[in-house]
Image (cartoon, rainbow, N blue to C red; front, top):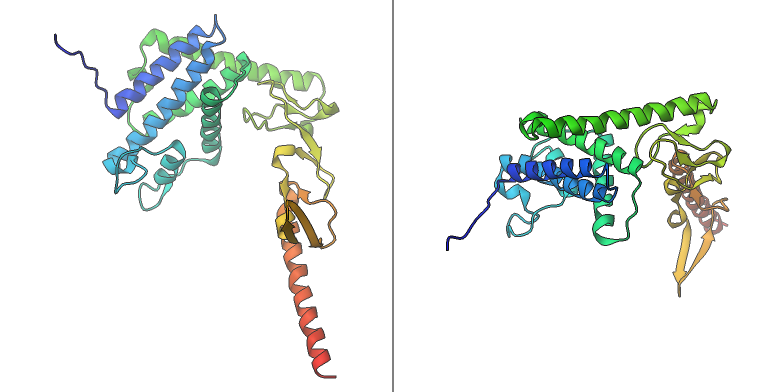
Length: 291
């Protein structure tokens, strides 16, 4: 009996996952559970596309260890090599990289943890990843989306894009109609749109419906996302013993977290104080020696 085989190149494999992602997204209109498979397949298509670009430069570049080419690289490694000036030297905007890395986090949650997804959230993530993939395939791999997806499938996916655009329009319209302050409509950490409302303590994105904790920076008093707060405890003079941290010099700070706007200035201030303390100590030592 003849053995049946199915072989795909890296590029063909990425196209297969992209087509499957589109099919699952359409199926999600009737079954929201299908969104997780749409997102999984789409992220896989991105990973294979990045690897294909590196393979075209040199086939060993898709392996994490070129001296022992067994395991292929991750999306994060692929992005680093693509941007490495000694390899490809291409620039991928930070905003696009953020979206890709967030998509990887979603894939990891789907495959390794409990996972909950809303239709709005899934549509936002699918739309932004799909848009990047269409751009990347066309710009760097010289393959247009109409050559990947059948006409009817592409047309249906474009309807999802239109739906996302309409959702975004409605979210912005609601912000305006409710008279919410533009200063309190932040860029959402989840979908990247300026639709995260912190006014009246709502702390929710009007587009993707994602909630985040918002706290007051103890240094400047401004509101910021809790996830953006950064500790500077390690910059102080401390000792760690038996599970406890002992602070010898707090340099005038009582709270040891700060928002992105404050953190660099605080670290510079601590270092400035530390240098001044050192010089004061050296002057005192010199004074005692000369008595």
